[in-house]
Length: 245
Ligand code: FPP
Image 1 (spheres, rainbow, N blue to C red):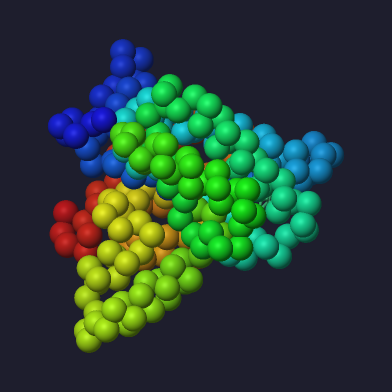
Image 2 (cartoon, helix red, strand yellow; image 1 turned 180 degrees about the horizontal axis):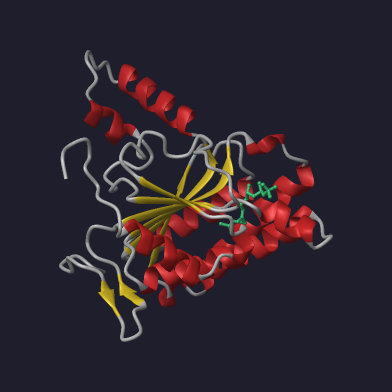
């Protein structure tokens, strides 16, 4: 954890050792699994398998450098349009990750939380998610996994919750507090891999003042060094939040 550390810490060779307290939350749009597989003459599934390995690698690195909140876009509300085998594969990879996390729960300082609509998920996956969320709830750093997530759906659902509560006039805080990410810091940095430069219905409310970083690296190739590069780029920016520098 990195509560009191104001500035980033660098090692002897200029490598990033710890982020500063102004970088609490990094979100990732893990794009390019399919292209990575296609370039190797393999099925898209294989790209997702390697993508899941990259995910674990990056989760570990973000923990090492003191990132308190990490969010990954694993499956959007629109991804159901993909072939069933591909959808099943992504769900299976998530199950496997949860099995691993649960088996080694004492070794990880990860509080896992799923954001998105869980209703259409399989009963088996729902049970694993509930167990993983329960077993890790007192851990330190937060890992949000966006699954069957869509920002428009999230905001719409938040507004409907507030209407149901009989609220007369809605404030920005009411909406923030009714989102899946209630109480969490907004993402400071959003990294999207594989060259696309769009948000794709991801954290649209929360990203109001996020810094964006786009890289051509395909997600399965993503390394610690690539994340470090994005963070170094983040530290070159001046965040003004609509004010003056
Ligand atoms: C986007 O690449 C990626 C996805 C829709 C799935 C992301 C899933 C993983 C990284 C693996 C499972 C996740 C976890 C958390 C264990 P794409 O398939 O759209 O790539 P393309 O644009 O090259 O086709």
